[in-house]
Structures are given as structure tokens and as C-alpha cells.
Image (tube, rainbow, N blue to C red; front, side, top):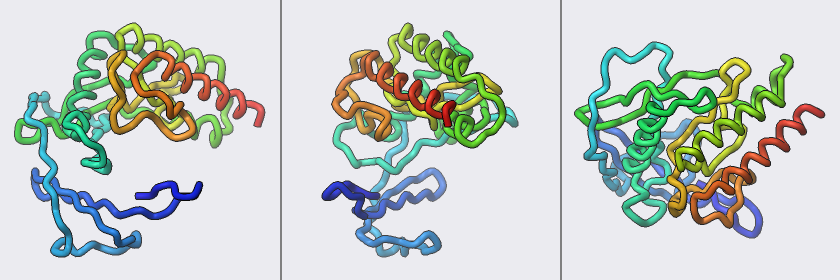
Length: 236
């Protein structure tokens, strides 16, 4: 983990996430490990990560083209408040996708089902799309209809807003390409309109750090940045 100090990024600490069967723990260390090193578990002060008490049962087998999204435990306990628990984030995204199952849109990720272990939600099974918008716009030499892409992102955002949902983090890496159509993904930090933002207010350089609540202007700001990015990539 890194933090800004004197306008520069400096090493802060290492966070270690451990899984044994259905048990999860995390530990903090001031040691900076190399990529190939393995921490000595016995030297760590392990803190348990509770799993969600909510449960659902998904039909089996899972689709072969399914991408299973697991919750990121990296920021567990970095902020205060029960609403910031990782199990709450996973459950929150599952509820957003339940809404989208009833009101789908071609420019928003399509949910398939929940992955369940021991009657607990441990992941979300989503349609596996193609490259990110970042890669498609900057690394793919094939013809690319930027105007059509921009319109698709705009329609997806408006659909979320019509459902009183605010994406709160729009950038080229959380938009995937389904052929030539953009698809908005990663809805774990999607909020209901008016809700206070939690542990993540958006991606650095793609959001306004002054935003404190989930409002349409959050997404409008990100959308304007996406528009500038797309037309800049066209010129280059």
C-alpha cells in the first residue's frame, strides 16, 4: 500500500489477505515484500474478516462463459463504519444486479447469478466481455466508432440514473467492449441517489475529490472525462 507524502508516492505498509477453507483473515506489516517472497504466517497478527450472513442459492452448473467476480479484501478495515465491510459491498452489488435483472440495458454489465458456498454469497457470475475501453482506444488499430461508443456510455449512465443509481466511478478501465458496444461494469461502488460515499469516491484523475454524496453530477463529471479521453485518442 502506498500513500502520498510531499507530493510523491511512498511505501506505507503491506496488507496480507489469507484464506483457509471458508475463513478469511488479514494482517498488516511494515515490511515491504518482494513479488516472490512468502510471508511467515506465524509472525503475523491475524484479524478475522467476517463473511456475510445473507445467503442465496444459485442454479448449477455455472455458464462456461461466466466471469466470476470475487470481493476485493484489500481495503477491509481501512475505514470506519459497518457499512464499509467487504461483505456489505458484495451484498450491495448483488442487490444492484437484482434491480438490473428486472431492468436490463445493453450498455450495463449483464448479471447471470450469484456464486454460493455454504449458503453464503462468495462471488457474482457475470457475462465475460472483451477488452477494456482503455485498451480498445489506445492499443487496438482496428477502426473504432468513437461517436457510437460515447453514445452507448451516455445511454448506460442515463439508464442507471432513471433507476436512481449513481455509478460514482466512470473511467476507461471499468468499461468493457462487447464487440463495438461499451458495457459499464464494476457496480460494487454504485450508490443510490443521495447516499453518502464510502471507502471509494472514484478513481484518481477520473473523479472530483470534493464529491461526498452520490449525485448525477458525479457521473456527469466522469462522463466528460471519458469524452475527452475518446476524442484525444482519435487524434493520436
